[in-house]
Image 1 (cartoon, rainbow, N blue to C red):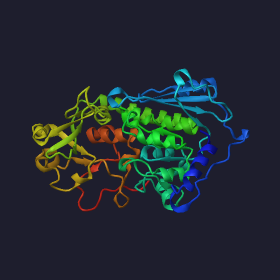
Image 2 (image 1 turned 90 degrees about the vertical axis):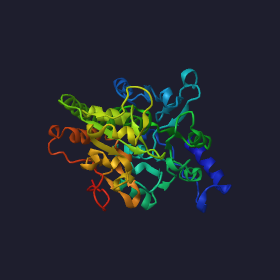
Image 3 (image 1 turned 135 degrees about the horizontal axis):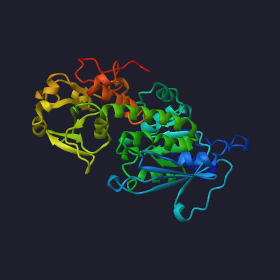
Image 4 (image 1 turned 30 degrees about the vertical axis):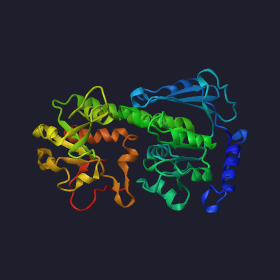
Amino acid sequence: MSRWTRAAVASVWALLGCVGGGESADTAVAEPDADSCAPAPSADQRAQYSELRHAVGFSLSYEDGHTVITTHPPVDQGGGEDVVVLVSCGHAAPPLSGRLAGAHVIERPIRTVAANEDLSLTRMRVLGLRDRVIGVGSRGIFDDGLRALFDSGAAAEIGASFHGPPRFETLLSIDPDVTFLSTASLTDATSLDRTRELGLAAVPAVSWVEPTLLGQGEWLHYVAALMGAEDIARPHFDEVEARYLELATRAARADRAPLVLWIDPSGAGDRWVVPSNSWKARAIQDAGGRVAFARSDGPTTVEATSEEILELGDSIFAVVTESIALNEPGSTGALEGLPAVVEGRLFSVHRRALPEYDAYDWYESAVVEVDKVLEDFVALLHPDLVPGHIPHHLIPARTGSEPARAPRP
């Protein structure tokens, strides 16, 4: 659906009283002149841009005049498939038949975006495209530049994914060219479907399906394909990948592999959620460590009781958590007697935090700037391999009454 058709739909909703505040929903951007169209990628660039080395949750196929973006999480992560045909400026859409039957067409250039999750916003930041963001999930954003867009009114609050569906009236009012929507799975994508039914272009943001940190990091190319920023994304990710692989190679040569317990409260009594076959487990392994309760197949997480954990005793070198609740002494219950906890080796991933905004950089950048995550874990397990390392995310969880904070970038 064209930008002008979307604007017409938004105007109808406004007249029906569905757009809050009495604001006009007609915010369409004029169609570009032919001279404003970016040069089409060459045949060599199309082949280069189509290559993905780690991601399994999406694929890119650059054709003459359009790009096909297919999102296809593994069956054990919900299955389903979503196909978007991204039509280059100045070109016509291809016939939507065969493998493109049922595909969703989006026109480039894309000047404005909204997102109900933080990772796509962070990828926009990395690509130098903060100024195109006109909708965010909430004000709880660690990045100063993105939060400033909200505070100034340049970006509206569309509702964070973990709170429920987006605010459709707000989306219609701001009329972004594309909205990134986090969904639990592509077979349960009601918000995505509803947004499209309203005439708004939307794409699934499901990098959570990736089993490795490098796979997560490669979703930068997903956003870059939509935004026409491949020439920025490709060299950036190449550097991240090279640094990650260099660190992993160093760690693989270490003469020991310390055992790490990664825990978060399960909410079901004296039980804990631990990663067993997820990117977190693989990141610890890539850092030259072992992961308690790890498996090479099966679910990404399992539950363990305090009794099962205590049986591991002093074989656990360090404990890592995402839960800020564990910062409080006594919060781990029976695990307070675990040697690693007693000796101060309980680590939070929230070194970079702004509690006053309920904003934590771990949730925004960890699976985007993946080399920094691995470097933290290598430094924790094998400090001699990265002398002088200043932690990016990790910090001892028991830091006293002051919240864990890091110097702003």
